[in-house]
Length: 120
Image (cartoon, rainbow, N blue to C red):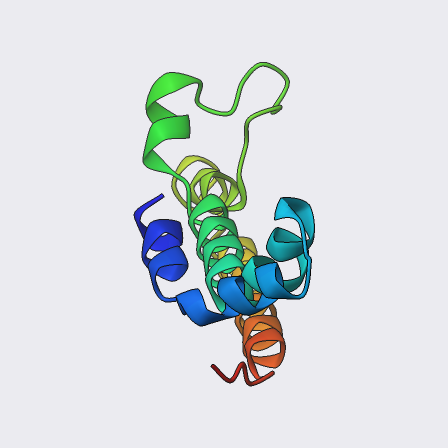
């Protein structure tokens, strides 16, 4: 919420005034002024949330240990189970590389989406 609040405070008031003068209602001001100018904040929040989901380990291990029927098992918990419960270090290393590639792809997607310049 703090990131979104900071992003909203960064939107210049003159754009809202200009949209109101042009006759735009609240929905049009949100859709055509606020949302495009918050695009970097939205992309940042989505990518950070996805990366933190991919790295979730402690909460799942302490609360459910991936059960019932592995329904709460994450990739990091799977790597942990491979390495330290089954002692399959090669498979755990391969799963870690796959996790790295997933996070890298997500980060590159973020750079591609944020590359669009927003001028105030």
